Length: 214
Image (tube, rainbow, N blue to C red; front, side):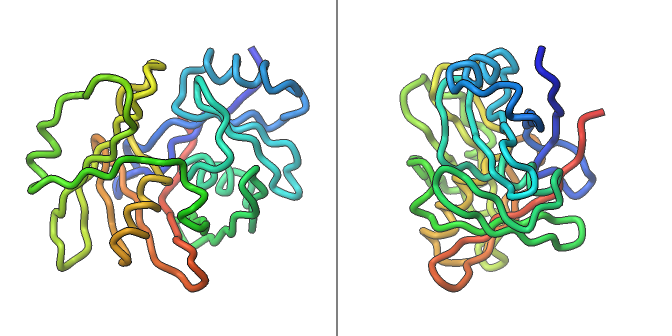
């Protein structure tokens, strides 16, 4: 097994939960795309990141089945791990800001992979949803408190790759924030937290807490 670290990204206020992320710091140890894909599948996390140049922040992101030009929770996690002030993804340069307990990344909504954003009438409805059959990437959400900008969400990737539900998803939060045009605090999964903000220049900022697996 190639050396790798495991982080939890978008942890809740108490430091719990968060979405697991595999990070291979020595990307040169797995140079071939096919081998990276195989390792991501073997690790079984929703995403695994390969660091190709730590100083410049060059990274490569894989799910168990596909390579992604950009994704939120991998960028937030590896930015925290490297202490980077920017990242270079296949989609472009991602801005990074470290703000106390939060690591925040900025990117345009156009970089986020397509998701179906499906609004429900209440947080309780979202809580009660069964996992849908594979086929469509669904971000189910409802206002917890619309005036306060708080949202309850769950994410169903629908890829049939063993990840039936994503605990926390930065790209979907980015798309939701862009669609609503306002800053949000999102509680997702079992208790993960994502904070977002609309920034100048068509950018959306997505942030959260990160911790190492114990």
